[in-house]
Image 1 (cartoon, rainbow, N blue to C red):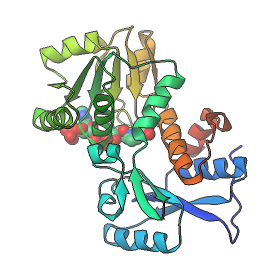
Image 2 (cartoon, rainbow, N blue to C red; image 1 turned 90 degrees about the vertical axis):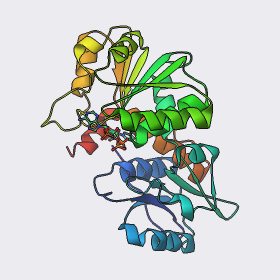
Image 3 (cartoon, rainbow, N blue to C red; image 1 turned 120 degrees about the horizontal axis):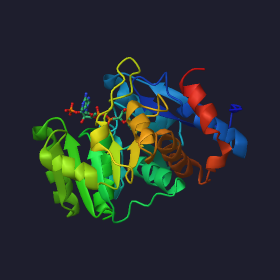
Length: 292
Ligand SMILES: NC(=O)c1ccc[n+]([C@@H]2O[C@H](COP(=O)([O-])OP(=O)(O)OC[C@H]3O[C@@H](n4cnc5c(N)ncnc54)[C@H](OP(=O)(O)O)[C@@H]3O)[C@@H](O)[C@H]2O)c1
């Protein structure tokens, strides 16, 4: 059962900055973790309009808040309001976690941590593997930067539907990390070879998120049994992409563990405590996300 936290006069404030935030599962995750570990913190929704972002951050500083998560559409917009940002955030240009250190407002991103920990938890090691990322948006950028910066893959390929968007991202990742990134579209012949020699394919497009449009970003013919299929989407739990992977006997996982683990990485910045993943039941979290 997900617990809630008790708010006292001494309670330290954390929350989620974004727009919209009302469907987020993050308040449930963090308040459960605070309560389970007996920590005097609370996590609240901090939805605001773009013009109010600067004022809200000033207010949070005045309230001596402990930190916050940042989500769409403000992951880049908060950067100028930070006193310091991590090397990783300098690479990605985004911040998903604000925290206070030595009275300074610091920003970093834990999205990559969440992704890599989710793979580790499922006993998949991406080191020296052929990695393909689908999409060229915010999540693709963050994961590509982290994988390339840490020199994790043997090869890294970005696949998108519009080469004029994929190519500049690949060039930027290569230029900032020194790791060569190749590109393709979903239908290029060279991409088919990449798909069939891939050890892991990571879906960072929203294709499959909407149950009314049950599509996979790649076809069954572009998949093979020895590959690991990761979907950043967590609702529905089994997208058409993951269903195809299951049908050919390939391993994979959805984005729920990534979401949870990036949140718990932020939690450590605010509290100094590690919230064990065992505090959570993934089925219960999924039911909460689906509003069941
Ligand atoms: N599990 C987690 O913790 C977590 C964290 C972050 C995001 N996510 C999920 O990851 C997904 C991507 O999020 P994001 O923030 O990176 O989104 P984003 O910045 O909007 O990027 C979306 C990407 O998907 C591509 N795309 C959209 N529709 C497509 C289609 N029909 N066919 C092929 N490509 C298509 C876009 O291509 P164009 O550029 O050509 O339009 C773009 O490259 C979302 O489902 C989000 O919920 C999960």
